[in-house]
Structure formats: C-alpha cells, structure tokens
Length: 449
Image 1 (tube, rainbow, N blue to C red):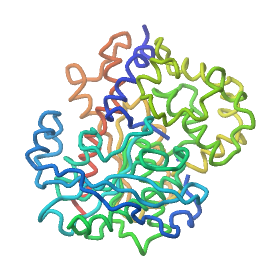
Image 2: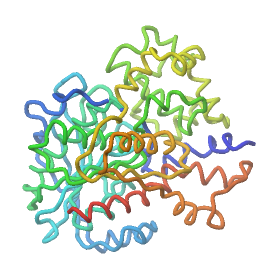
Image 3: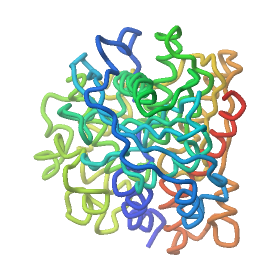
Image 4: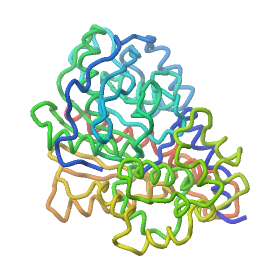
C-alpha cells in the first residue's frame, strides 16, 4: 500500500476528530471592491444574547490538562462566559440574511476592556454544527488559548450553518466571508455589554485553514473599507489557502480533495453562475446527480460521507483517484491549462494576494501540511508581500515542533508503506498543526493587546 492510499484511509477520521465532527481545518476564497462589507443593519442582534454556560478556570484547566493543550495554552486566568449570537448579515449578492456564532467573554474583572479576537473556523461539512458548544474542540481551544487569558473571542458559524437561514454556504468566497466576520464583530460589541463586560476597541483577526482565508479577507476589508470603524491592531492567519488560482495548477491532488474542491466549485457556481452550464460536464455520475446540494450536509460528517459511499475514499482511493472519480477529465485539464477557464478566473478573484496589511500580520503553517501546503500558499503570499515592499508581514513554520511532538522518535515518518506515516500525515493539518500556530498567534496579540 502506498503513501497516498494510507493517507486516504485515515484522513476522514482525522478531520472528524480534529474539529468535533464538523470542521477540518482545510479549505480554500474573494474580496469585493469595497462596498460589500457593510450594509443596512448588518451586525444587529436578531435575538438577545444568552449566556449558555460559564466555564470556570478549574473546568478549563481540567480540560486543557486532559487534552494536553495546557502545555501550550498555559493555565486559565479567567472564567469564561459562553454566549450565543444570532445576528444580521448579508449574502454574496447583498441578500439580507443572518448568521449565528459564539462570543467567549472573559468573566469578572477579566471582562473589563478586553481586546477582541475575531476568529474564523476551519471547513465544516456538517450544517447543524455551531461553535456555541463548549465541548466542541475548536471552541475549547479558543477558550483555553484566548478567552481564559483575557481576550474576548467572537467566532461565526458562517452563512448556511446552524441558525443561518441562508440557503447555501458560499465556501471560500472572500467577500461574504469578510462580511460575515465583520458583522460578528459588530454583534459582539452589543453582546459584550449585555453580558456585563466591555471591549477595549482593539480588534485582532485570526482563523485556521478556510478560516485563515476568511480572517485575512476580513482583515483586508476592515483596513481597506472600514478603517474608521475597526481599530485593527494585528492579524494572524493560520494555514490558509491564499493562492487559490495557483492551487488549481497543481497536478497532484491534496489530501481531502474530495471534500474541499467540490464544495468550492458548487459554491462558486451559485455565487457567479459561470463555472458551467451543465453539471454533467464537470462531474461524473453518480456524483453529478446530487453534488450541487451535498455540502454542508444536515446529517453526514467527514467519515460518513466516505463510508456511505457518498464521496470516494472508503476503498483506499488516493487523493488523485478520488479526484478522478468525481470530476470529468476534460474539465480538470481545462482548469489546469486554460488561462481563460472560468473556474480559474473565479479563483483569481478569490486569491488574497496584492494587498498591503497595515497592522502587524503573521502567517503560520507547517511545511509538512498535505492539505494546505505552505509552499503553495503561505510562501507565495509572503513572496507577494515582499515583492511590493510590505514590511508588516512575518511567517513562521511550525513543522519542527510538530515533528518533535508527534513524529516517531521526534521525526516525521519517512516510510510511506507504514501506518505510522499515514497516521502522522493524515492528522497533520486537522489535529497537530492548529495548536502550535495558535501559540504563535497569541504571542503576536500579546504584543499589541
């Protein structure tokens, strides 16, 4: 059995485990021309914010010690109120709608003049999942790493998830990602007061994987279009796919391809309407008959999407084999080779290159990431910033720490025929990488809070 067969065998389970059954960490986005990040009444609360529970420092420390996170997060300094949000926002074409999310508010004296981290989550395939769940691993990481250290955190569930009535999720469409995140900040300002806390006015943007793309989109929109409203002091964008058009030129499929790429293609078809005129020219059967409305799913998760046969992967398919089972070969060839291919042009709209952050900005990734390879995204983004003389952006590669912590004998496995190789690289993006990047993000935030 080769390396990619082994990876395919474990990736769905590792993605599921990493994010509480809903999110990965993996994904791929669009920034509008400036008017798309505001709208009448956006960010207004549609329901009173409710304190779902209060996590004590003892409870947070118990959870972080049990999971092993405490070695990175440190012990909790603050109790944390978990507050539900349901707020108004707009869709990619200005449709009036709503999104839900969570505000993690430090309690007691910690809740006074707290800086606000606006966080964007990794890719969800489960429509019902909400971050208003203290047991969700992504929510708990935010609690232990930030909120229990004195930061308020607002994290959106995105359009099309949980309480959102929007009919689909515009996956990796940066303009709507930016709107949803910025409106969550507006909602958090109101909710914090109602919960008896206060915000300092300082805003930091962060996110992981798809969320790294979303947070960078929001950071750019805040500085470019809303500079008088948002006091952006830092951005930390983690393992995000910033060079989408470049990723479409790769001849080898990345791990998780069968989830993320169909999600993106069908979302952009709904946003732009130009990817295809006949679904059968893009997808093979049986996938063409249901793929357009598959994700996010009301019932299936990463594992059951594969084990049910809804998406390929249950029979040890490599990422390339999974890709080729879903997509028509002529379509793939045209995307890779035709500079006027509409999907490629849509990807260029969604690249997050060519802008200049004013606030301190960190890009984090791990060189061994098989899902969002830094060589394609983080390195390309840094080269773009450097080429234009941008001095606010730094990068960090956490691969050495991942190897030392999770690699057998402190090194990444090198034998692609072993289960250890599959386990290590299958869990790399969704499980191993996030905590190390969050440590670096908080270190940056601590310098400007």
